[in-house]
Length: 317
Ligand SMILES: Cc1cc2nc3c(=O)[nH]c(=O)nc-3n(C[C@H](O)[C@H](O)[C@H](O)COP(=O)(O)O)c2cc1C
Image 1: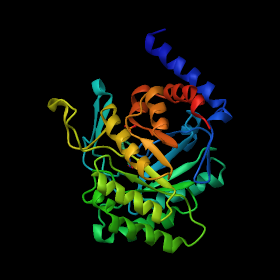
Image 2: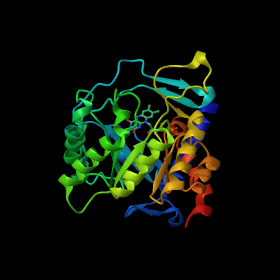
Image 3: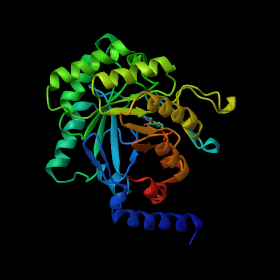
Image 4: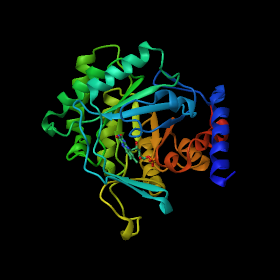
């Protein structure tokens, strides 16, 4: 047996341990949604919602699909994803490649009808289509929201990915308020939990304006954070255009969480550079309600979820 074989078999063994289910102590109730454990898969891995049952089987406590746009789009030309193993980091400029809201809604409905739906919450992350001018962003988000309505346990307005020109400008208070009000006006009551995902690169006063708006509009909470455009922590030879994720993002995401927590008691889903049990515990101590991982999962695989859950018992309420 090769060492790679031994490693793969031991990962599978750990996965079946996870399949036994999350211990009740790890469960959380956030925004009225029951999460069997607080470790989720961040947006961008399952953009089209094709593998929902697999994420549950691997031990995640929830999964966020997308980013989904109103219109299908191919994303940016390749190469567009770069591995930086020494930094346990990734740089991506995928540009919201996805099948579009209509096709994905069709798939999700079929999965529900055929009882192929996971027992973990599914979040739906929506973003602006590239072809839609920023001035018409609210209409574009509304189209996705309407098309996917009722299929997710919570929804996320992604206004923070760096790879769609002008998208991050939608974090401005006025533009964001217009999007939220447009969705809420259409929705009436009852309202689905709605989160806003923020960038780690926002100036403090701009971040505080988003927090203020989230409180005024009674949002479910914030996701902190998306990838960063700050690449100063990388050796120049490794640099590429795009959003940086993984270990180099850890401090910035943690700082963003702390700034938000100083200002509000709203739930925060912490994301960015969480790559072991210690960094997971650190986010809970800083006031996170739930966590999401992406890059560390790419490098370390599903055993990481189990390791984090095993060490989180003591943080359960
Ligand atoms: C390849 C890749 C694609 C991503 N795509 C999306 C996306 O479509 N929507 C989104 O909100 N975030 C996306 N993200 C950002 C992640 O959801 C997450 O916020 C970020 O990577 C920080 O977490 P991490 O350090 O654990 O990776 C993507 C990240 C990566 C690495």
